[in-house]
Length: 236
Ligand SMILES: C[S@@+](CC[C@H](N)C(=O)[O-])C[C@H]1O[C@@H](n2cnc3c(N)ncnc32)[C@H](O)[C@@H]1O
Image 1 (cartoon, rainbow, N blue to C red):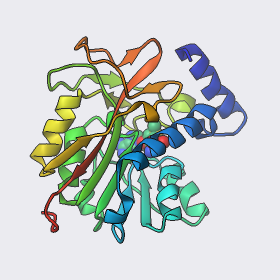
Image 2: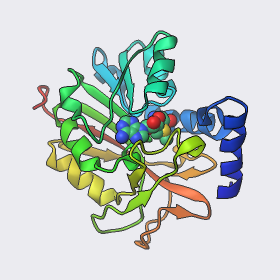
Image 3: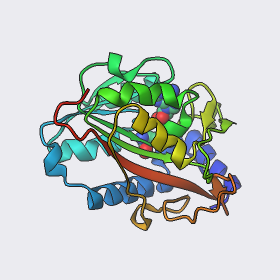
Image 4: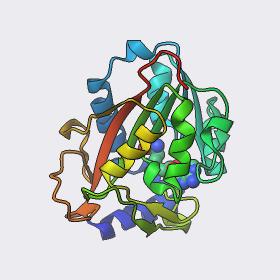
């Protein structure tokens, strides 16, 4: 799908009083990413863990964990998304990841951070706060560079911005930048589970690394998914 068509879809949703999260490609990305995640992990090892979903948007990824019997609290930097989550009975609070360290937001064992790292102006600040969790499930857009780089991008606002950076400034980290940061905050096991199972119409996990620095190829965003874990039973 090209950018113009995508913008038209966003505008159509906005004019019809719906959110961008009602678009077909969002639903598609939710099921493909969850499918990829669940194909690569043993959920039973995490039974009993308290989950914090960040940058939740409509919170449908968190819903999947609720259905699987986990205790899930969701958060987002936008109060309107949090209000919608609460209105349907979910535990939720406003958390701007560029401003509030996640470890000051309560006691959680597992952080579910899908589709949000690249919407942060300060992704290192966010990741530092994740170091106390036992598990970090991380999914993000990335740039194709072999160096640890963090290019900054300006993101859309208004009707185009409901799912974009709260600060209007995002980043497109390289995979090795993300892995270095996760290691430096104490995750000993950092497993890249990016796989074609997770692909959807405008997001791709099985892209070929060329080191050209781009974060989009032929209208499709380059993505990565990791499972980061503390190997010791007691997280730091
Ligand atoms: C692309 S959506 C991802 C929604 C969902 N997690 C998913 O992956 O389908 C990004 C979400 O991050 C939120 N967001 C953007 N900047 C944020 C920030 N600084 N702190 C917390 N959430 C933020 C947006 O409001 C939006 O709901």
